[in-house]
Length: 418
Image 1 (cartoon, rainbow, N blue to C red):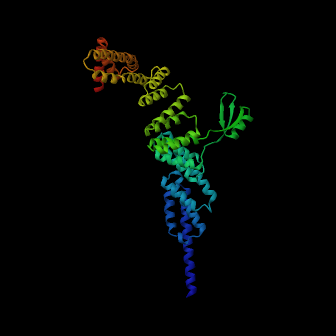
Image 2: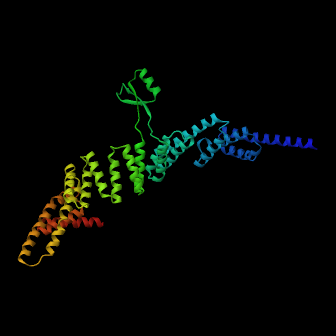
Image 3: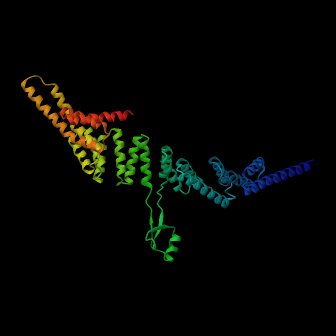
């Protein structure tokens, strides 16, 4: 009886073994014919026999399952993940084959990423670039591409996560470049080392050399900071900005970005300090001068504001906002004059003071007029500047100019309603 039982078990194991090999062979054949649906069906049958498989057979099953799921590049992102998971289980036995397949997967993902990028579908491109890195977690530049393309479509949270990962990895993106000058065109060309050396040997290129590319770390920490700014996470933005500026101390845009964060937070003095620093670095920048004028005016420093507005106009004679703000700065003195005029009595001394104040007020109007006139010259459709100047002409008694501007304002208002 025992002998018969042993014979029966042996027969059963042999049958299982035959079935395993049959299904795996069918799957292998289907994969070679690019019939991946058939391969998956055969592997599903083989999966039911997993408990009786030896390690070598299991490895083959996982290897074939990885191939079938990848489907020679037709797989979805989910199937690619499943494919890689199965391939990872077979690496001990199929190490070289899997390495080659993983490289094919990387190449396929990169191609899809590049195709999506060419179509300006940056969100999809970013996901393919990231997946290209995740396959082996070796070529960090793909992770960098993923972050950069995510920024293009304002997927800031995702970009931030990737940038933080790059920063933690110590990624710099520094690469060695090999170059030589093309004798025919006279232009320098960047080539791989072997090609460069062959061209130089063939004497079609001269002046060979090599250099390192610039580090991408400053860009990474800068983008981290800017994303924090965009997300309104001001405290983290300030900390990230300081780190970014330490990496790129001469980047004026970083200084301005940090200044803007301080402005949003109400740190007026720090904002002004950073703007002045930026102005020292770029003294010919009219916008910087204008912004310093704005903050000086807001800080109740009119003379300093005037100095900056006039400097902005000097640097850019068509900087319309500087003219408008200069007129506002001048007319801002009117309120105190009107308040004093309204508080006067009827005495002879009060009448005399009233006349003095009225003349002073008219002088303000005359001082503001050239700035408003220039603003309208630069932008004839500026209705606010036109209205203000129209009212000034009315008070000054310049009737013809008042009527002309009154008609213009009416036309501008009619156009705005249409």
